[in-house]
Amino acid sequence: MTSIDEQRSPAGDARAETARRLLDSAQKLSYDPLREVDWETPLDTSYHGMSPEWSTLYGTPYWAELTEDQRKALTRQEAASVASTGIWFEMILQQMVLRDFYAKDPTDPAFQWALTEIADECRHSIMFARGAAKLGAPAYRPQRLVVELGRIFAATANGEAAYAAILVAEEVLDVMQRASMRDERVVPFVRTINNIHVVEESRHMKFARAETKERLQEAGRVRREANALVISIVSYFIVSSMINKDVYAAAGLDAKRALREAKRNEHHRSVLRSSCAGLMEFLDSCGLLTKPALRFYRRANLV
View 1 (tube, rainbow, N blue to C red):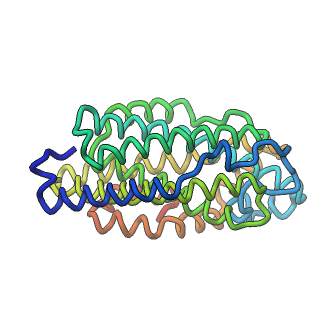
View 2: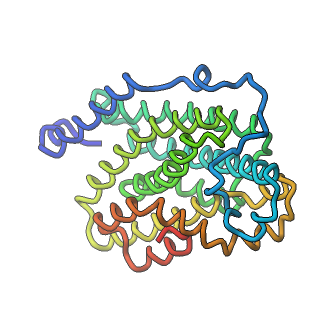
């Protein structure tokens, strides 16, 4: 966090003003998922859980063979898996933000915004957890290695590495949810969840972009290139963990065949790339799209 003197500088003033705008926005437009989401109506299995075009099997020969009921069952499990991955990363995010603002000036609007963001993420995680349960899904979790790497990242990441990684997770989820929240094929309570998350996460993304740019102002070439690689590796693990391999069996499909076809599904790769075009432009403008980093973004199908 900045000192009082730094806050009086142009950069400090701009940062404080951004935080004030975000606080005002949160006061005017925030939701209580416990009241806004219809938790009482039983799950209507005639709906998808996400826009089918976002399914990992959409466009494959296996998808063409599936019945509509099977497709809907799959997208409901995939949506639950994405929600579970969102919870995992939001818990990492909260730890990083708390560490960053620990024992800093509580009168600073940026400090107050950081706590507001943490409060949002707590509500989002509960909302995702209840949503996954209502979709009839098991507790999907990343692989054990990824969980332990996430634990290390949460305890050590700082500066632009922390905020740019936050941005990657939020940007990918944002595009996916924007598609589903407007899609009448998606079960209504999931559309409400997506709408709440998109509205509130838009503020978080603005903050993450601003923090990334500010932290990079003092970064030398070695630090910038090192963190560019770290961010790309974290991005790979986030994106590759979004759809758990167990969703196919949970949906009653041939898991081995589904995994095989999902891995080479060019349509899904294309959807991921298009969803991250703006993000990649931002990272490039910050000098974070280095050659070593690009290897991991390609592996994650983000470029």
